[in-house]
Image (cartoon, rainbow, N blue to C red; front, side, top):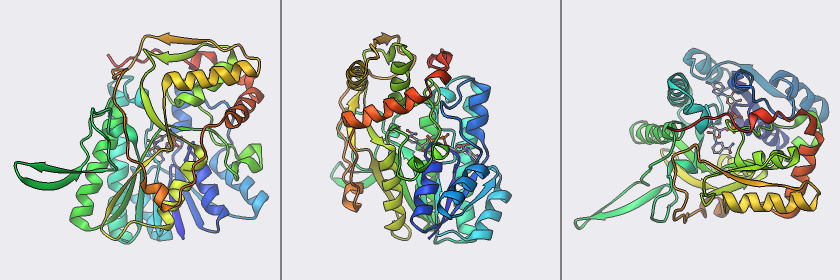
Length: 382
Ligand SMILES: NC(=O)c1ccc[n+]([C@@H]2O[C@H](COP(=O)([O-])OP(=O)(O)OC[C@H]3O[C@@H](n4cnc5c(N)ncnc54)[C@H](O)[C@@H]3O)[C@@H](O)[C@H]2O)c1
């Protein structure tokens, strides 16, 4: 397959480039370095320094003999994106190129406006480029489990059949989320569904939970191939943040009561899910939705696991419940259907003690680079 990966420099995009390349697919990676620049602007850079995308793909080529083609540019620039589609005519496009942080979208009006513009226009441009260059190209869009919010009913896999006053119909599962960033993801899904119905494009929308970890078979080949490791309040996902806080001797920052429950997955499983979706595509003219997670944890359960392993390794981990900067339910019902990707062949890597210990070992290697000011930036929803 020829696979176009948008957001190729990112936490998920870079390992995805390697994963497809290692399996003999032709990979074209695009990024505009938004994430790197935003992290410098907000003083919350990756714990592990990462060479730029050109240099990383050269390192990959030196090690494996495989090439990843790199283009630096903005997906919201339609002429640029269309020229990439025309040059390569990809079979699949994987869309990671968005502003991915809820706190970032809540900093101020400008960051909110950027998030709206960046996320919605990038998705719109991809739809148009596919229609213009190759309507058969399969769009794989990374959505988020956060789109559903925490409803007091079971969360189905994308769709809900409703019977109302004796008549039945099937709709997108109701979405009610907790940040402007997540709202743009809902709007993306609505937009894709509109163009699937109207133009018959083919889309897989992956409702992904928070990802943790840094290890994949390909990234493990050389430390220079490691993905970004963000552990800050803005770009760091919760488990990545807790592990670095534990190593730094900083109390784990649990927001509010800590009973907020979410569906998590290992970075290795993100690779599998995206790969399975690409190699077993949606049907032509279908919007296929999968819930992408492998196990549920509350924030307290994660903090306790990190404390238990950290204490065993001699870190003397403290856990602190701080005032919740977000507006979210701290106690709620959460029951999710997520069988679709398992049916396609996903073999989950669960969060074992060994996995957490190896994660501690990586963070410990970079202990001297930890920026303690990055753990809390004071971004509040209200
Ligand atoms: N990491 C997670 O836990 C997680 C969970 C659920 C959903 N997601 C989604 O997965 C996707 C990737 O997330 P990530 O954690 O890898 O984030 P990331 O910020 O590390 O990666 C996104 C990449 O896209 C690039 N980008 C952003 N806007 C762009 C544009 N207009 N043109 C070109 N490049 C652009 C950024 O520079 C960055 O390198 C996002 O859409 C995010 O919403 C991530």
